[in-house]
View 1 (cartoon, rainbow, N blue to C red):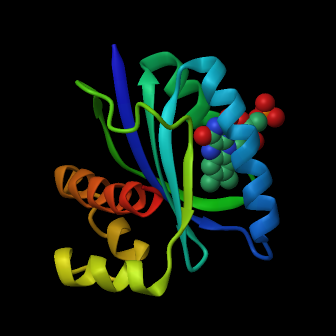
View 2: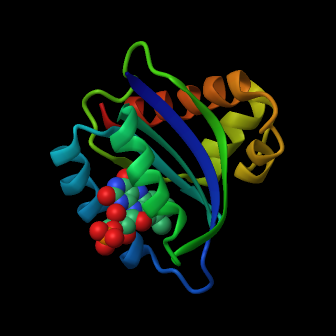
View 3: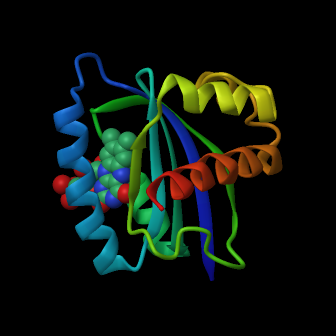
Length: 143
Ligand SMILES: Cc1cc2nc3c(=O)[nH]c(=O)nc-3n(C[C@H](O)[C@H](O)[C@H](O)COP(=O)(O)O)c2cc1C
């Protein structure tokens, strides 16, 4: 069975853009070998990441990610069966969101930071909708 996981976390103190880009390059290579796809978004020291793929591969990766000292306060906001992959073409898309991306988010779905997503951990379907909106924006930007 394939699953999708979306989590929110807070970057470790002093984490640089360079470290993040290095992490993403390695993540893309690993995810490719495991058939995992997904999207990592970063804004004001917070991460939101979606991972999709075979249940055991995603769970194994998630346990590694949870132990990574480059971020803290990792909270899974959505975990469920993945009927159809949303990021099939991306082993790990990455974007650091701008203030204008977040403004758009605020006007469309009424949240203005990732911390607000964290507060939605009891509404997983809403989290999934918001994350798909965010990642679609990213896809449009890259067109
Ligand atoms: C925010 C964040 C997202 C990450 N996403 C991935 C990922 O999608 N794939 C991956 O292989 N590693 C990812 N990592 C890195 C893993 O935590 C870990 O360093 C990597 O899997 C190598 O683990 P290993 O050295 O134990 O093999 C991420 C780390 C952070 C902090």
